Image (tube, rainbow, N blue to C red):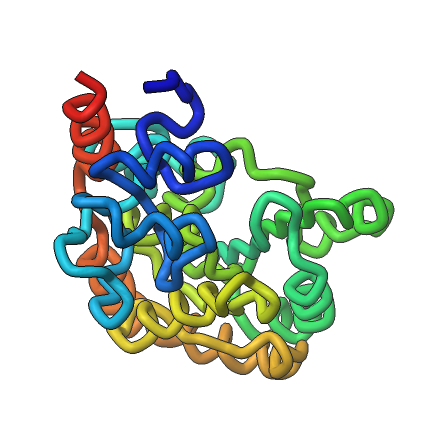
Length: 269
């Protein structure tokens, strides 16, 4: 059995997919199978989903969950709102909007946030925002946005703290981000990337929205005015945000990384 440190014992990606064909375990974290999972799926006795899409999950597969960094139950950084607020500075009494589009950013979300910001800033008392701009950071960094209450960063190295402090998140619907949102129980507006393989981001967002954990806005419908409308509605509805956060937390699968690792290690032995 080859030692695949990045994809041990059958995580169905790249070279690991070859191992998955002969192993009893595979892992996916989205509501649609990638090519490796589709090919290797019938051969695996164990599988892990963050989202239990029973209509697509082969018999014998389970909902093992998605591992994520600094999990709340593990006592990692950014577990509590006050930790996030302390990390970011004096945010007490203010409404923090966090916008991100994955590790590379999302131009559609960036443009919608920038276009909506003047209206949002004028209508929501104490509003501040953090925009994780990704590859578009250089162009945005030249604008005096922080003076207007919007901090722009290239990459969120401190994402657990940002999520702990955030009142609302605007995001793509990738699996890692959703795992973080679920772990911390944060209300969100999800904008699925329309070109994601197999439409998995849309399926992810639908799963969250149908359970009351998020509001889904299709990428093509995300205009500054639409975003401002959705953000304002949630900003002035704290009880709804609270309920959305509870619904998100209800999707969370504690101990996912440990369970998937145990399945893989047991097989390797």
